[in-house]
Image (cartoon, rainbow over all chains, first blue to last red; front, side, top):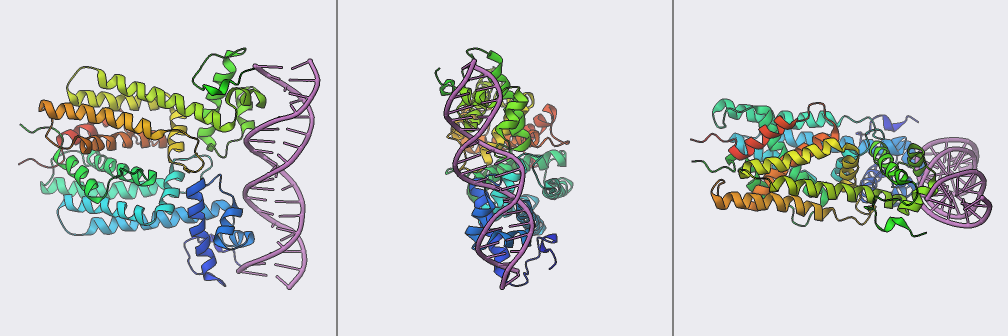
Length: 207
Length: 207
DNA sequence: GTCTATACATCGATAGAC
DNA sequence: GTCTATCGATGTATAGAC
């Protein structure tokens, strides 16, 4: 009877392979709707169709369940960004690909991503030991790498690649925030592309 | 014995003028550190040096206390943005003033602002009835108004003022997120200005 | 592995005296 | 207005049977 919660990414389950996965999905939905702290494990297990000891068997604690959600989300986001940045094209296109990939992933996995986003910003003292900073560095690092390439090739102006990455990150944060908030006037992919183009082309009138 | 919590912005208190204010400050710090849902009223009143009935006398409930924090924060932020945008100068300077004002206010009142920010993103179902959307519209509206002026005067390119406002909002969100997360590499005012300049001048090399 | 039943703490909020 | 004392509900987690 090994404790399974030592590796929350392992998707195989000893007896009922679906119980663990159902718990993850149910938790994402409930944590999203009521907030992690306000959600009760009773609600989660009922929504997942299991009982409390099942949750504690797989995840060890309520926090372990949250941690598993954060880890899968961060892993998939990092993978999507790396894949999008690696595709061929101009730097502007490749940066656009990264932004679209993030946008798409958040839309596709909204509950998990909203839970991750909320956790990111809520109560450092309460947080489980999860290195959001590493995810940050991965994404910003990928942007900075692309922009530095663009500067060296002459496609972009010779500015600080760090500052440029932050400018792009701003557009990314805008998209993320809007998706997370489910704003009714939120940007679709075309709108995201328009704003991104503004950052590349500038607002100032060139004389 | 009128219930005072009908107007959370009223700063006058019947007997002990400091008790209400001390509760607001203590709550901001505790909600910031542990999260609203995880913080207990016991902790808050102890940290404020009062007893539970005092809290319920002034704010009616734990949620009423949160609401009072959100309202003062939103009011002051809206006032700061309006004042900064009204000052004379080029549009680029005035937009810069707005961003700096937001940046300054968040640094000065970090607990309140972090609590507001976390609430903004956490668990719509749990949220008190607070119209964050109105604050959003105020800030974005002010940006859009300024940018439209800049477009009409010829200082800026003839782009969509809505898209341009979103591009600037991205820089603002970047600043806010960094301050809220207390990142050690977060932008100071000079850095914020550099990123803002990049958005005005563009990343692309102009041929 | 998964169940029933429960232990045990803590929560938000209030009653009633002063 | 502010106190002490407490209520009733709910929380996470676990013991013990199977």
